Length: 523
Image: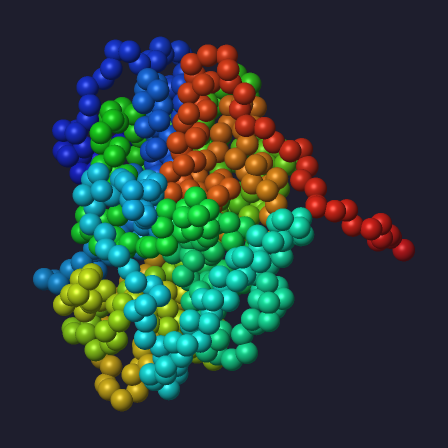
Protein backbone atom coordinates (compact mmCIF):
# COMPACT_ATOMS: atom_id res chain seq x y z
CA UNK A 1 0.00 0.00 0.00
CA UNK A 2 1.40 3.36 -0.97
CA UNK A 3 2.09 5.81 1.83
CA UNK A 4 2.25 9.48 0.93
CA UNK A 5 3.79 12.05 3.25
CA UNK A 6 3.34 15.70 2.34
CA UNK A 7 3.87 17.72 5.50
CA UNK A 8 6.92 19.67 4.39
CA UNK A 9 6.72 19.79 0.61
CA UNK A 10 7.51 23.32 -0.46
CA UNK A 11 5.43 24.69 2.34
CA UNK A 12 2.39 22.61 1.47
CA UNK A 13 -0.08 25.48 1.13
CA UNK A 14 2.02 27.10 -1.60
CA UNK A 15 2.46 23.72 -3.24
CA UNK A 16 -1.23 22.91 -3.51
CA UNK A 17 -2.27 26.31 -4.82
CA UNK A 18 0.27 26.03 -7.63
CA UNK A 19 -0.76 22.55 -8.79
CA UNK A 20 -2.29 22.22 -12.26
CA UNK A 21 -5.58 20.53 -12.97
CA UNK A 22 -5.32 16.88 -14.04
CA UNK A 23 -5.32 16.28 -17.78
CA UNK A 24 -7.79 13.88 -19.32
CA UNK A 25 -5.44 13.07 -22.19
CA UNK A 26 -2.66 11.57 -20.13
CA UNK A 27 -1.56 7.94 -19.93
CA UNK A 28 -3.19 7.11 -16.60
CA UNK A 29 -4.36 3.57 -17.27
CA UNK A 30 -3.79 1.91 -13.91
CA UNK A 31 -2.86 -1.73 -13.56
CA UNK A 32 -2.61 -3.68 -10.34
CA UNK A 33 0.72 -1.91 -9.72
CA UNK A 34 1.10 1.25 -7.65
CA UNK A 35 2.46 3.19 -10.63
CA UNK A 36 3.82 2.76 -14.11
CA UNK A 37 7.06 4.42 -13.01
CA UNK A 38 8.69 4.81 -9.61
CA UNK A 39 11.21 7.66 -9.46
CA UNK A 40 13.51 7.10 -6.51
CA UNK A 41 14.91 10.41 -5.34
CA UNK A 42 13.42 13.90 -5.48
CA UNK A 43 16.49 15.86 -6.49
CA UNK A 44 17.06 17.62 -9.81
CA UNK A 45 17.30 14.41 -11.87
CA UNK A 46 14.18 12.91 -10.31
CA UNK A 47 11.99 16.00 -10.60
CA UNK A 48 13.07 16.74 -14.18
CA UNK A 49 12.43 13.11 -15.15
CA UNK A 50 8.93 13.42 -13.65
CA UNK A 51 8.34 16.70 -15.47
CA UNK A 52 9.42 15.08 -18.72
CA UNK A 53 6.97 12.20 -18.24
CA UNK A 54 4.22 14.70 -17.45
CA UNK A 55 4.94 16.67 -20.62
CA UNK A 56 4.78 13.41 -22.57
CA UNK A 57 1.29 12.87 -21.22
CA UNK A 58 2.31 10.31 -18.61
CA UNK A 59 1.23 11.06 -15.05
CA UNK A 60 1.17 7.54 -13.67
CA UNK A 61 4.39 7.92 -11.68
CA UNK A 62 5.42 8.33 -8.06
CA UNK A 63 8.45 10.22 -6.73
CA UNK A 64 9.80 8.44 -3.65
CA UNK A 65 11.96 10.80 -1.56
CA UNK A 66 13.75 9.92 1.68
CA UNK A 67 13.81 13.46 3.05
CA UNK A 68 10.90 15.68 4.05
CA UNK A 69 11.22 17.91 1.00
CA UNK A 70 12.28 17.84 -2.63
CA UNK A 71 15.70 19.11 -3.67
CA UNK A 72 18.19 16.30 -3.02
CA UNK A 73 21.62 17.77 -2.29
CA UNK A 74 20.27 21.31 -2.73
CA UNK A 75 20.10 22.09 0.97
CA UNK A 76 20.35 25.28 2.98
CA UNK A 77 20.83 26.20 6.63
CA UNK A 78 19.78 29.24 8.66
CA UNK A 79 22.80 30.55 10.51
CA UNK A 80 23.21 33.50 12.82
CA UNK A 81 22.30 35.01 16.13
CA UNK A 82 18.69 36.18 16.65
CA UNK A 83 17.96 39.23 14.55
CA UNK A 84 20.90 38.54 12.26
CA UNK A 85 20.09 35.28 10.57
CA UNK A 86 20.81 34.29 6.97
CA UNK A 87 20.11 31.36 4.68
CA UNK A 88 23.34 29.80 3.42
CA UNK A 89 23.81 26.87 1.05
CA UNK A 90 25.50 23.79 2.50
CA UNK A 91 25.12 21.96 -0.81
CA UNK A 92 25.20 23.35 -4.37
CA UNK A 93 25.72 27.10 -4.32
CA UNK A 94 26.71 28.20 -7.82
CA UNK A 95 25.19 28.29 -11.29
CA UNK A 96 28.33 27.21 -13.12
CA UNK A 97 28.55 28.39 -16.68
CA UNK A 98 25.66 30.81 -17.26
CA UNK A 99 25.04 32.17 -20.77
CA UNK A 100 27.05 34.04 -23.38
CA UNK A 101 25.04 36.73 -25.12
CA UNK A 102 22.00 35.14 -26.74
CA UNK A 103 23.65 31.73 -26.79
CA UNK A 104 22.52 28.57 -25.05
CA UNK A 105 21.68 29.15 -21.40
CA UNK A 106 22.53 26.73 -18.66
CA UNK A 107 19.16 25.14 -17.76
CA UNK A 108 19.85 25.85 -14.08
CA UNK A 109 20.12 29.55 -14.95
CA UNK A 110 16.87 29.27 -16.92
CA UNK A 111 15.10 27.80 -13.89
CA UNK A 112 16.55 30.49 -11.62
CA UNK A 113 15.27 33.21 -13.94
CA UNK A 114 11.87 31.58 -14.27
CA UNK A 115 11.35 31.30 -10.51
CA UNK A 116 13.10 34.59 -9.65
CA UNK A 117 15.80 32.92 -7.56
CA UNK A 118 18.34 35.60 -6.72
CA UNK A 119 21.91 34.93 -7.85
CA UNK A 120 24.95 37.13 -8.19
CA UNK A 121 28.11 36.94 -10.33
CA UNK A 122 31.02 35.63 -8.25
CA UNK A 123 34.45 36.86 -9.43
CA UNK A 124 36.62 33.84 -8.70
CA UNK A 125 39.67 34.98 -10.65
CA UNK A 126 39.86 38.74 -10.17
CA UNK A 127 38.82 39.39 -6.56
CA UNK A 128 41.31 37.46 -4.41
CA UNK A 129 43.57 38.21 -1.44
CA UNK A 130 46.39 35.79 -0.56
CA UNK A 131 47.82 34.75 2.83
CA UNK A 132 50.19 32.31 4.44
CA UNK A 133 50.68 31.23 8.06
CA UNK A 134 52.48 34.52 8.82
CA UNK A 135 49.69 36.74 7.56
CA UNK A 136 49.15 38.72 4.37
CA UNK A 137 51.39 37.46 1.55
CA UNK A 138 51.06 38.55 -2.07
CA UNK A 139 51.47 35.64 -4.49
CA UNK A 140 48.78 36.56 -6.99
CA UNK A 141 51.37 36.24 -9.76
CA UNK A 142 51.75 32.56 -8.85
CA UNK A 143 47.98 32.18 -8.94
CA UNK A 144 47.88 33.70 -12.42
CA UNK A 145 50.58 31.28 -13.54
CA UNK A 146 48.62 28.39 -12.07
CA UNK A 147 45.57 29.39 -14.11
CA UNK A 148 47.69 29.48 -17.27
CA UNK A 149 49.13 26.06 -16.43
CA UNK A 150 45.72 24.53 -16.08
CA UNK A 151 44.61 26.08 -19.37
CA UNK A 152 47.61 24.47 -21.05
CA UNK A 153 46.89 21.11 -19.45
CA UNK A 154 43.33 21.23 -20.78
CA UNK A 155 44.67 21.93 -24.28
CA UNK A 156 47.20 19.08 -23.98
CA UNK A 157 44.37 16.72 -23.02
CA UNK A 158 42.80 17.39 -26.40
CA UNK A 159 46.03 16.38 -28.10
CA UNK A 160 46.11 13.15 -26.10
CA UNK A 161 42.64 12.30 -27.37
CA UNK A 162 43.61 13.03 -30.98
CA UNK A 163 46.69 10.81 -30.67
CA UNK A 164 44.65 8.11 -28.88
CA UNK A 165 47.00 8.18 -25.92
CA UNK A 166 45.96 6.64 -22.61
CA UNK A 167 44.46 8.75 -19.88
CA UNK A 168 46.54 9.80 -16.89
CA UNK A 169 45.88 11.62 -13.64
CA UNK A 170 46.12 15.39 -13.40
CA UNK A 171 49.13 14.97 -11.13
CA UNK A 172 50.91 13.27 -14.03
CA UNK A 173 49.76 16.05 -16.34
CA UNK A 174 51.36 18.66 -14.11
CA UNK A 175 54.59 16.67 -14.04
CA UNK A 176 54.68 16.15 -17.81
CA UNK A 177 54.18 19.86 -18.46
CA UNK A 178 56.77 20.83 -15.85
CA UNK A 179 54.22 22.46 -13.57
CA UNK A 180 54.58 20.34 -10.43
CA UNK A 181 54.31 22.68 -7.38
CA UNK A 182 57.69 23.43 -5.80
CA UNK A 183 56.61 25.32 -2.67
CA UNK A 184 53.57 25.95 -0.46
CA UNK A 185 52.43 28.91 -2.55
CA UNK A 186 52.44 26.97 -5.80
CA UNK A 187 50.69 24.11 -3.97
CA UNK A 188 48.01 26.46 -2.61
CA UNK A 189 47.43 27.96 -6.06
CA UNK A 190 47.22 24.51 -7.65
CA UNK A 191 44.69 23.55 -4.97
CA UNK A 192 42.66 26.67 -5.76
CA UNK A 193 42.69 25.96 -9.50
CA UNK A 194 42.30 22.16 -9.43
CA UNK A 195 40.75 20.97 -6.17
CA UNK A 196 38.49 23.98 -5.72
CA UNK A 197 37.82 26.43 -8.59
CA UNK A 198 36.76 23.66 -10.95
CA UNK A 199 34.60 21.88 -8.40
CA UNK A 200 31.94 23.68 -6.38
CA UNK A 201 28.09 20.31 -3.86
CA UNK A 202 27.30 20.95 -4.90
CA UNK A 203 27.21 19.55 -5.59
CA UNK A 204 26.07 18.91 -6.18
CA UNK A 205 25.16 18.24 -5.70
CA UNK A 206 26.29 19.31 -6.44
CA UNK A 207 27.07 19.89 -8.01
CA UNK A 208 28.85 20.59 -8.63
CA UNK A 209 32.33 20.99 -10.36
CA UNK A 210 34.40 20.76 -13.47
CA UNK A 211 37.23 18.99 -11.80
CA UNK A 212 36.61 17.79 -8.30
CA UNK A 213 37.18 18.10 -4.61
CA UNK A 214 39.96 15.58 -4.94
CA UNK A 215 43.73 15.82 -5.20
CA UNK A 216 45.20 15.97 -8.76
CA UNK A 217 46.28 12.32 -8.70
CA UNK A 218 42.63 11.30 -8.27
CA UNK A 219 41.37 13.20 -11.32
CA UNK A 220 41.32 12.04 -14.92
CA UNK A 221 43.38 14.33 -17.14
CA UNK A 222 41.16 13.88 -20.21
CA UNK A 223 37.77 13.79 -18.49
CA UNK A 224 38.65 16.83 -16.38
CA UNK A 225 39.39 18.72 -19.58
CA UNK A 226 36.15 17.89 -21.38
CA UNK A 227 34.13 18.34 -18.19
CA UNK A 228 35.57 21.86 -17.97
CA UNK A 229 35.15 22.68 -21.65
CA UNK A 230 31.57 21.46 -22.11
CA UNK A 231 30.43 23.82 -19.35
CA UNK A 232 32.72 26.86 -19.60
CA UNK A 233 34.18 26.97 -23.13
CA UNK A 234 31.67 28.41 -25.59
CA UNK A 235 33.75 27.15 -28.54
CA UNK A 236 33.27 23.62 -27.20
CA UNK A 237 29.53 24.02 -26.71
CA UNK A 238 29.78 25.38 -23.17
CA UNK A 239 27.56 28.06 -21.67
CA UNK A 240 30.03 30.68 -20.41
CA UNK A 241 33.05 31.02 -18.14
CA UNK A 242 31.07 32.77 -15.40
CA UNK A 243 29.76 31.45 -12.09
CA UNK A 244 26.83 32.95 -10.21
CA UNK A 245 26.42 32.49 -6.47
CA UNK A 246 22.89 31.82 -5.23
CA UNK A 247 22.00 34.27 -2.45
CA UNK A 248 18.24 33.79 -2.40
CA UNK A 249 16.93 33.61 1.16
CA UNK A 250 14.38 30.97 0.13
CA UNK A 251 17.27 28.69 -0.72
CA UNK A 252 18.72 27.44 -4.02
CA UNK A 253 16.35 24.45 -3.79
CA UNK A 254 13.54 26.85 -4.74
CA UNK A 255 14.36 26.34 -8.44
CA UNK A 256 13.41 22.67 -8.30
CA UNK A 257 10.65 22.91 -5.70
CA UNK A 258 8.87 25.71 -7.57
CA UNK A 259 9.26 23.82 -10.83
CA UNK A 260 7.76 20.70 -9.22
CA UNK A 261 4.82 22.69 -7.87
CA UNK A 262 3.76 23.53 -11.42
CA UNK A 263 2.92 19.96 -12.40
CA UNK A 264 2.98 17.56 -9.43
CA UNK A 265 -0.19 16.32 -7.77
CA UNK A 266 0.00 15.47 -4.04
CA UNK A 267 -0.51 11.76 -4.70
CA UNK A 268 2.54 11.74 -7.00
CA UNK A 269 5.03 12.34 -4.17
CA UNK A 270 5.93 10.17 -1.19
CA UNK A 271 8.19 12.00 1.27
CA UNK A 272 10.02 10.58 4.30
CA UNK A 273 10.22 7.30 2.37
CA UNK A 274 13.60 5.59 2.68
CA UNK A 275 14.20 2.83 0.13
CA UNK A 276 15.90 -0.34 1.42
CA UNK A 277 15.35 -2.93 -1.32
CA UNK A 278 14.71 -2.95 -5.06
CA UNK A 279 13.56 -6.25 -6.56
CA UNK A 280 13.37 -6.38 -10.34
CA UNK A 281 12.54 -8.86 -13.08
CA UNK A 282 11.20 -8.90 -16.60
CA UNK A 283 7.71 -8.39 -15.18
CA UNK A 284 8.44 -5.18 -13.27
CA UNK A 285 9.85 -3.93 -9.99
CA UNK A 286 9.01 -3.98 -6.29
CA UNK A 287 10.51 -1.36 -3.98
CA UNK A 288 10.51 -1.91 -0.23
CA UNK A 289 10.71 1.04 2.15
CA UNK A 290 12.29 1.25 5.59
CA UNK A 291 8.84 0.99 7.20
CA UNK A 292 8.17 -2.27 5.26
CA UNK A 293 5.79 -0.61 2.80
CA UNK A 294 6.09 -2.10 -0.69
CA UNK A 295 5.55 -0.24 -3.96
CA UNK A 296 5.24 -1.92 -7.35
CA UNK A 297 5.71 -0.52 -10.84
CA UNK A 298 6.57 -1.43 -14.40
CA UNK A 299 9.78 0.66 -14.32
CA UNK A 300 11.96 2.23 -11.68
CA UNK A 301 14.37 5.14 -12.08
CA UNK A 302 17.17 5.27 -9.48
CA UNK A 303 18.54 8.77 -8.95
CA UNK A 304 20.45 7.95 -5.76
CA UNK A 305 23.86 9.53 -5.34
CA UNK A 306 26.83 7.48 -6.51
CA UNK A 307 27.97 7.25 -2.89
CA UNK A 308 24.76 5.51 -1.82
CA UNK A 309 25.13 2.96 -4.61
CA UNK A 310 28.77 2.36 -3.73
CA UNK A 311 28.10 2.00 -0.04
CA UNK A 312 25.49 -0.71 -0.56
CA UNK A 313 22.74 1.08 1.36
CA UNK A 314 20.21 -0.24 -1.17
CA UNK A 315 19.83 -4.00 -1.65
CA UNK A 316 19.11 -5.14 -5.21
CA UNK A 317 17.36 -8.45 -5.82
CA UNK A 318 18.83 -10.13 -7.73
CA UNK A 319 22.27 -8.57 -7.27
CA UNK A 320 23.24 -6.10 -9.92
CA UNK A 321 25.21 -7.67 -12.79
CA UNK A 322 28.99 -7.48 -12.57
CA UNK A 323 29.29 -4.90 -15.35
CA UNK A 324 27.00 -2.52 -13.43
CA UNK A 325 28.76 -3.08 -10.11
CA UNK A 326 32.16 -2.44 -11.71
CA UNK A 327 30.93 0.83 -13.19
CA UNK A 328 29.51 1.97 -9.86
CA UNK A 329 32.66 1.12 -7.94
CA UNK A 330 35.07 2.50 -10.55
CA UNK A 331 33.94 6.11 -10.19
CA UNK A 332 34.81 8.22 -7.14
CA UNK A 333 32.41 10.03 -4.80
CA UNK A 334 34.04 13.25 -3.65
CA UNK A 335 33.37 15.31 -0.55
CA UNK A 336 33.29 19.11 -0.49
CA UNK A 337 32.70 20.88 2.81
CA UNK A 338 31.84 24.53 3.43
CA UNK A 339 32.40 25.70 7.00
CA UNK A 340 30.40 28.81 7.88
CA UNK A 341 31.30 31.30 10.60
CA UNK A 342 29.48 34.40 11.77
CA UNK A 343 31.21 37.19 13.71
CA UNK A 344 29.78 40.28 15.33
CA UNK A 345 31.50 42.40 12.70
CA UNK A 346 33.74 41.97 9.69
CA UNK A 347 37.53 42.18 10.11
CA UNK A 348 38.75 40.28 7.04
CA UNK A 349 39.60 40.86 3.37
CA UNK A 350 37.51 43.16 1.18
CA UNK A 351 37.83 40.93 -1.88
CA UNK A 352 35.33 38.17 -2.58
CA UNK A 353 37.85 35.36 -2.14
CA UNK A 354 41.04 34.57 -0.25
CA UNK A 355 43.63 31.82 -0.59
CA UNK A 356 45.60 30.59 2.43
CA UNK A 357 48.91 28.72 1.97
CA UNK A 358 49.67 26.34 4.81
CA UNK A 359 52.55 23.92 5.29
CA UNK A 360 49.94 21.16 4.97
CA UNK A 361 48.24 21.07 1.57
CA UNK A 362 44.47 21.42 1.85
CA UNK A 363 44.38 22.79 5.41
CA UNK A 364 41.55 25.37 5.33
CA UNK A 365 42.83 26.98 2.10
CA UNK A 366 39.84 28.65 0.37
CA UNK A 367 37.90 31.48 2.01
CA UNK A 368 34.92 33.46 0.76
CA UNK A 369 33.41 36.55 2.29
CA UNK A 370 29.63 36.71 2.35
CA UNK A 371 29.83 40.02 4.21
CA UNK A 372 30.43 41.70 0.87
CA UNK A 373 28.50 44.39 -0.96
CA UNK A 374 27.52 41.84 -3.64
CA UNK A 375 26.25 39.20 -1.25
CA UNK A 376 25.16 39.77 2.39
CA UNK A 377 26.69 43.10 3.49
CA UNK A 378 26.73 43.54 7.27
CA UNK A 379 26.09 39.83 7.86
CA UNK A 380 29.40 39.07 9.57
CA UNK A 381 29.54 35.85 7.53
CA UNK A 382 32.57 34.16 6.01
CA UNK A 383 33.13 30.54 5.03
CA UNK A 384 36.12 28.31 4.39
CA UNK A 385 36.12 25.23 2.18
CA UNK A 386 37.96 21.93 2.57
CA UNK A 387 37.75 18.93 0.25
CA UNK A 388 38.65 15.29 -0.19
CA UNK A 389 40.54 13.57 2.60
CA UNK A 390 40.51 16.72 4.73
CA UNK A 391 36.70 16.75 4.55
CA UNK A 392 36.62 13.15 5.73
CA UNK A 393 39.00 14.01 8.55
CA UNK A 394 36.91 16.83 9.99
CA UNK A 395 33.70 14.79 9.70
CA UNK A 396 35.15 12.54 12.38
CA UNK A 397 35.86 15.46 14.72
CA UNK A 398 33.69 17.36 17.16
CA UNK A 399 32.41 20.72 15.92
CA UNK A 400 34.30 22.47 18.71
CA UNK A 401 37.60 20.91 17.60
CA UNK A 402 37.02 21.87 13.97
CA UNK A 403 36.18 25.43 15.04
CA UNK A 404 39.39 25.57 17.07
CA UNK A 405 41.46 24.55 14.03
CA UNK A 406 39.68 27.00 11.74
CA UNK A 407 40.24 29.82 14.21
CA UNK A 408 43.91 28.92 14.49
CA UNK A 409 44.24 29.44 10.73
CA UNK A 410 42.19 32.63 10.74
CA UNK A 411 44.34 34.07 13.53
CA UNK A 412 47.46 33.13 11.59
CA UNK A 413 46.08 35.08 8.64
CA UNK A 414 45.60 38.12 10.92
CA UNK A 415 48.49 38.09 13.42
CA UNK A 416 48.30 41.81 14.22
CA UNK A 417 44.71 41.96 15.44
CA UNK A 418 42.70 40.22 18.12
CA UNK A 419 40.44 37.83 16.25
CA UNK A 420 37.33 37.07 18.32
CA UNK A 421 35.53 33.75 18.53
CA UNK A 422 32.60 33.37 16.14
CA UNK A 423 29.05 33.84 17.37
CA UNK A 424 27.79 31.08 15.05
CA UNK A 425 29.47 28.09 13.39
CA UNK A 426 28.16 25.33 11.10
CA UNK A 427 29.16 22.71 8.54
CA UNK A 428 27.44 19.64 7.07
CA UNK A 429 28.90 16.14 7.17
CA UNK A 430 28.12 14.92 3.65
CA UNK A 431 30.12 11.71 3.66
CA UNK A 432 28.52 10.16 6.74
CA UNK A 433 25.00 11.14 5.67
CA UNK A 434 23.43 7.79 4.62
CA UNK A 435 21.28 9.53 2.03
CA UNK A 436 24.29 10.90 0.12
CA UNK A 437 27.67 9.44 1.21
CA UNK A 438 29.52 12.38 -0.29
CA UNK A 439 28.96 15.54 -2.32
CA UNK A 440 29.26 14.64 -6.01
CA UNK A 441 30.95 12.25 -8.43
CA UNK A 442 34.46 12.45 -9.82
CA UNK A 443 36.05 10.73 -12.83
CA UNK A 444 39.39 9.09 -11.89
CA UNK A 445 42.03 8.00 -14.44
CA UNK A 446 40.92 4.35 -14.29
CA UNK A 447 37.28 5.18 -15.14
CA UNK A 448 36.78 4.68 -18.88
CA UNK A 449 33.99 5.86 -21.20
CA UNK A 450 32.70 2.30 -21.24
CA UNK A 451 32.23 2.51 -17.48
CA UNK A 452 30.21 5.70 -17.95
CA UNK A 453 27.95 3.94 -20.47
CA UNK A 454 27.48 1.06 -18.06
CA UNK A 455 26.74 3.36 -15.15
CA UNK A 456 23.72 4.79 -16.98
CA UNK A 457 22.70 1.56 -18.76
CA UNK A 458 19.43 -0.16 -17.88
CA UNK A 459 19.15 -3.59 -16.28
CA UNK A 460 16.45 -5.85 -17.81
CA UNK A 461 14.88 -2.74 -19.36
CA UNK A 462 13.12 -2.22 -16.02
CA UNK A 463 15.82 -0.72 -13.83
CA UNK A 464 16.98 2.75 -14.93
CA UNK A 465 19.68 5.07 -13.53
CA UNK A 466 20.12 8.85 -13.75
CA UNK A 467 21.92 11.62 -11.90
CA UNK A 468 24.93 13.86 -12.20
CA UNK A 469 27.22 10.80 -11.98
CA UNK A 470 25.70 9.24 -15.13
CA UNK A 471 26.41 12.31 -17.27
CA UNK A 472 29.34 11.79 -19.62
CA UNK A 473 29.77 15.51 -20.34
CA UNK A 474 28.62 17.12 -17.09
CA UNK A 475 29.39 14.64 -14.30
CA UNK A 476 29.47 16.40 -10.95
CA UNK A 477 27.42 19.36 -12.15
CA UNK A 478 23.87 20.32 -11.22
CA UNK A 479 23.07 20.73 -14.91
CA UNK A 480 24.43 17.21 -15.43
CA UNK A 481 21.64 15.94 -13.18
CA UNK A 482 19.15 18.08 -15.14
CA UNK A 483 20.10 16.68 -18.54
CA UNK A 484 20.22 13.10 -17.27
CA UNK A 485 16.75 13.42 -15.75
CA UNK A 486 15.47 14.87 -19.01
CA UNK A 487 16.96 12.05 -21.07
CA UNK A 488 15.77 9.30 -18.73
CA UNK A 489 12.24 10.70 -18.74
CA UNK A 490 12.17 10.75 -22.54
CA UNK A 491 13.43 7.17 -22.85
CA UNK A 492 11.17 5.75 -20.15
CA UNK A 493 8.22 7.46 -21.84
CA UNK A 494 8.91 5.38 -24.97
CA UNK A 495 8.65 2.24 -22.85
CA UNK A 496 5.37 3.33 -21.28
CA UNK A 497 3.81 4.42 -24.56
CA UNK A 498 4.46 1.33 -26.62
CA UNK A 499 6.72 -1.45 -27.83
CA UNK A 500 9.71 0.77 -28.68
CA UNK A 501 11.42 0.10 -25.36
CA UNK A 502 15.07 -0.55 -26.10
CA UNK A 503 16.60 0.48 -22.81
CA UNK A 504 20.21 1.59 -22.68
CA UNK A 505 22.82 -0.85 -23.89
CA UNK A 506 25.86 -1.90 -21.87
CA UNK A 507 29.27 -3.45 -22.36
CA UNK A 508 29.68 -6.88 -20.80
CA UNK A 509 33.27 -5.91 -20.06
CA UNK A 510 35.25 -2.69 -20.33
CA UNK A 511 38.69 -3.30 -21.82
CA UNK A 512 41.81 -1.18 -21.69
CA UNK A 513 42.95 0.87 -24.67
CA UNK A 514 45.72 -1.63 -25.33
CA UNK A 515 46.35 -5.02 -23.71
CA UNK A 516 49.06 -5.62 -21.14
CA UNK A 517 51.87 -7.91 -22.27
CA UNK A 518 51.54 -11.40 -20.80
CA UNK A 519 53.25 -11.65 -17.46
CA UNK A 520 52.97 -14.78 -15.35
CA UNK A 521 51.77 -14.07 -11.83
CA UNK A 522 52.22 -17.64 -10.63
CA UNK A 523 55.51 -19.12 -9.36
